Length: 459
Image (cartoon, rainbow, N blue to C red; front, side):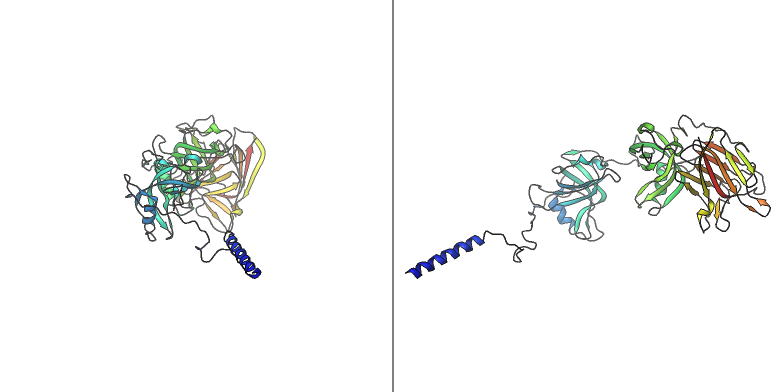
């Protein structure tokens, strides 16, 4: 009898232990369960809509359509309605677009669609991080692709929010401008022409020493500290929705540093001089720290207005030639002690024809112009000199007023190459321009062959 009772107790204990073990989680992934363990399985939705403005696809329908696309295919323009599940990024710094995910019902585990690098309401730029948030109901208008055959998403920069929580606005439509100008001081490019020229360049290709005229449409930042530059946008007419050009980390009038926020404002008319780049092949802008405001509302420098007929520099004014040394002197300044010296041989072991510019030092640049002549300024490696022919010119621009420039020139046998005595010199703001004027009907005058440049700043 005792044996029977003992057996019953053992069986009951085993049953209790077995039941208790069923409540303990497994310490590993059960291979008999779904791959990955208790994986989240999205709740299937019911596809609705026709993809039109009147009847947008819901996210389920849009995903089904996009997933059938092959490489190189897109949906064409469609409308997709959903709620923002999560916001990945809002870029208010450079591209002004956002990346986020939408689904049919964010209270459930439902599949989502990536809205990738998409614009704001009405195809406008994003300007604040809080313009969208999780839970917002949106209708997205744009083109969608199946990226690499496995990622349904909107095509970058080809979609925007058509409605946001029921609010719609007319899409921003850019008014096309007419390209004008030649990119010169006398005839600057307008913004439309400059954009066309820069966009035609290869990736990171550059246009140097050009002038572009426009009106400031938006100011992004003004750095009054270490760098003293500003980033803003200009367009041909900032009263219309016209395409704009980014003036990126650019200096103030005369290549000086910015010292106050109010030195420029929206609506100001500017001529920008410097180097423009097709950054990464998709962003036309000025190259950082290689441009400045040449004129601001008609002024070349603070307190001075550019006259319609500026004084023509006279031969010999501010110019002296002694042996192999040419000196350019600004009579309206007092010579300081700060100097910058540049050896032309620094340009290296290859000819440069034509020569367009030399960075003499940080913030000090020397640019060259052929002056309409067939022979343009050039650097010759064999002689380590820069050659200036008749009517060629150079401009040296710094970030402060220049008092004097000393040019050490080359000679060959008995010939000294110091340019013509009829050359002209003009100082304006932080710049000085020399032109090797020769106006005789025949001949080429005297070349200037520069070996060394010394710039002396004013006190």
